[in-house]
Structure formats: structure tokens, C-alpha cells
Image 1 (cartoon, rainbow, N blue to C red):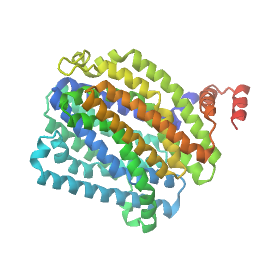
Image 2 (cartoon, rainbow, N blue to C red):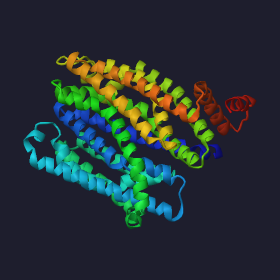
Image 3 (cartoon, one colour):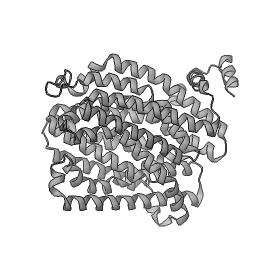
Image 4 (cartoon, rainbow, N blue to C red):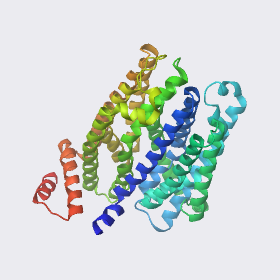
Length: 462
């Protein structure tokens, strides 16, 4: 029982559990909507979610990464000022974005109506204000490593959304407009809970200082682009496909493999969420050896873990497509000629590259090199866009769009390791050695064993 309690309270376990729960609810809701909507309507839903995710990267990317980095080693009045500045800047960004979207809706109504993004321009300005408090709360809680509270907020939001979709699927079908209204209401409820519990720090806005505002904005001018670029790396495929002659049906087909990559992203997001505060705190204390050690451990452990995930995804690709979207997406589409299962298998290979790529970016941010990380992401984004344009407009192939993801990620790994090696003098083999040590140490914690081999490996790395 003590062993079980120790595992359940461990940061990585709590973070992973939270992301697993959210992913299950998200994929479950996605599967129900794929079965209940036509391809065109489902494509509009995907565009709404993709556009919302992209804009939220800008809204919260300005301050989120910087807040986690600085808050990890802050206390007293400085901590309160940082939280206040985060809330103030996030609110300002929300106002600016809402005004821009409303003006676009008023000035270009016909173009927006026929673009597939009508629902986004109609509803996102309201959604942006209603989901602000709970999203601000998430980043404060992550900096404080309060993963139980993070799990609670995400479960309320995602669980409420899933119940609405389940109601739509089993009891009373809802139109796309009604579904989005329900989503807005769920976000409002989640934000109200975070406000009542005081997790968001919105009321610290008056404590914000020009010093902390400048500090977060200086760091954020790079991390904003990094986060937007990272999101674009995932959503630019959908955006370019939607603007191409392939249309909404191709968006719907491609969205299924993209959704399945979330299975691969679950452990990655979970471990990164715990690694970044630790690495940032070590960096602020000038403990670069500890930063390097954490980079080795997380990169190696995740790479080994992803070998298993990618193997399962590749072998059981048909089963996952059937589970997510039903029989209609299992065979080659007779109109477009695209095969969803083949694209899933390409993405399973892409998943093998994600851990080291993501950890190089996190490490650069943690040692206060966000500009270098932004350059890395910019190069990856340019490579992805070029690859997508060639794949879609020249070869008219969705599977080549997926293959382009592999190439831009290889470029990202090379750039990340090159820049990070200049700062930390890395030993490349130590990534895989330390990855093994991570699992040996985890086994020792669970069983209370102590192996001499574990000690020898540790000494060799040092």
C-alpha cells in the first residue's frame, strides 16, 4: 500500500494520469463526432478546434513559458507580481485578439462564411474571455507542480465536453452551432471554479509591476513564436489542405491520423510538464550539470518508451482507425484515393523522433535561450510548409504530407542538439545510457532495491 501511495503521488505519474484522462475523453468525443457528422460538417468542427488551438498558443504563449521558468524559483512579493503580470498580459492579449476577430467578421462576412472558419470567427471571441481564468490557473499550478489540481481542472473541462458530445450522440443530436455553445458554457463553468478556488491569480493583476511585465514580455517575445510555430507544425497541414482544392473532406480524412498522434503525445506532454520546472529551477541556481542530467534522463527514457508506442501504433493502425472513426474511414476513400491507415503508419514512425526534438527545445528555454529555440522552430516550420506545398499542390498526396513531418523533425533534432551542445557540452551516448538508468532507478524506487550496476552507470555518466 505504501508503494502504491508513493507511485500515485509522484509528479510524473500525476502528470501522465491527467494527460491520459484528457486524451481518452478527447479521442472519445472525436470518435463520436466523426461517426455522427458528415465529412463536411466534421471538417468544420476540426477547423474550429484547430484555429482555436492556434490562437490560444499566441494568447498564452506570451507569458506561460516565462512564468513557469521564473516562478519555479520565486517567492514572496516577487511571486505575486509575476502572477499578476501573467494575468494582466494574458487579459490584454485576449482583448486584442477578440477585437481583431470581431472586426474581421464585420468587414469580411461573405469571405469568412465560405471559408469554413465561420464558427471560429463567430464564437471564439466569447470563448476567449470565458476560458481565460482556468487557462491562467493551469500555468500557475504547473509552475508550482500542483498536478492534482491540474488534473481536477482538466477533468472538469474535458469531462463536461465529453458528456455533451455523448448526449448529442446517444440522446438528442445537436447542430454544430449548438455543440459550440455547449463548449462555451463548459469553459465558463471551469473558469468559475478556478476563480472561486483562487487558483488563477486574476485578482493579483493590480500587483503587476513594470519590472515583471518587461521580464515576462522579453522572454515571451521568443517563446510566443516558438509556441505558435510548434502549434503550426501540427496544424499547418490542416490549414494548407483546407485552402487547397482537396477541400473539407480531405481535412476530415487527415484529421484522424493527427488525432491518433495524440496517443503518442500523451507521455511526451506529461514528462515535459514535469521536466521544465525542474530544469528551470536548476538553471536559475546555476546548476548546469543538473540541467544536463535531466535532459539525458527525460530524452532517453521517452525515446525508449516511444519505441513501444510507435510499434503498437504501426502494427495496429487499422484497429485504431476503426476505433476512432468507424468503417467508413478504414478503406481507401473512393473520391480522393487517400488511405487513412497508411498515413497512421507514417505518423507512427514520426513519433520515434518526438522525444529528443521536444526535450532540446525545453532545455534551451530552461537555460534562458528562448531565441535559439525560436530559430529552431522557425526553420522546422519553413521546411514543413515547403514540404506540404509540394505534397499537396504538386503530388496531391496526403501521405507525402505526413512524410514531410518526418523530415522537418529530423532537421529540428539536428539543430536542437547543435545549439544545446554549445551550451552544455553534451555526450550523445549518455542520452540512451541515462534513459536505461531512469527505468532502473524507477524500478528500485518501487521495489526498494539497490543495484551496484545502477551506481556504476551513474558514476560513468558523471
